Length: 309
Image 1 (tube, rainbow, N blue to C red):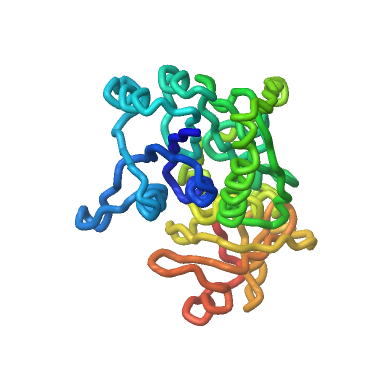
Image 2: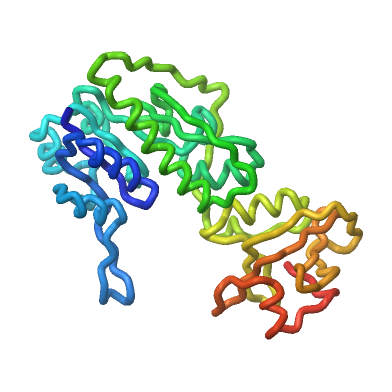
């Protein structure tokens, strides 16, 4: 079975690796263009390109896949049986989706039809879902609306987006490996998504990290985990961003103005939020790395009565 693989970030590395380790015929890897960093002095390869080069796979990095007849011709010439997509980063045109014998399949980081869209991992944590997972699905022109092939779930517990991202990437690789033989044997069962149960996970922006202390400590703690490592949940102190990376929800009632620091100790900084108390245990100030509150207090004066915005 001839496979073309399309993916870009770390999330897309484990599925590519498992294809190679299990001896599948990966004809081509398609990924996003390299990025310049350090003021243009160094070039950063997408993680998928780095992985592909380890296995000496051919790699192409088109600037665009839509309205690009040369790219479409190159894919057609390979006569792929299947195109596997994982976080490629661009919407694929219909003419590409129609090329492979068995279609284009996508590894999506949610239990569809919930959390269609760009940020399913972060949104599932922020919304307080108890579980999430991976869905292998056929691609069509709609946003994550295609028929489902298979899925695997996992508990969210108190995982951060970074931890869940890593776990789901591995889960996606497992699911792909388990499902691939069924394409050739004709055992794939297509399950239509129930659009009535669909929800969306819109893209995350930096401004989404600004904490609203009128919300409950539970909601804020989920926001902190859901936005770790990017963009990070933050409050404003003296006009500068103070990022919070770890927090605990305390049962204590707190009648102070939302955002008021009510207690400071090496254990953490207690803040009034939604009538209760949120305890911050890991913090980051501009120009510094993330640190425990105990370490933060060694070099910074921070007292009850301060109001964070």
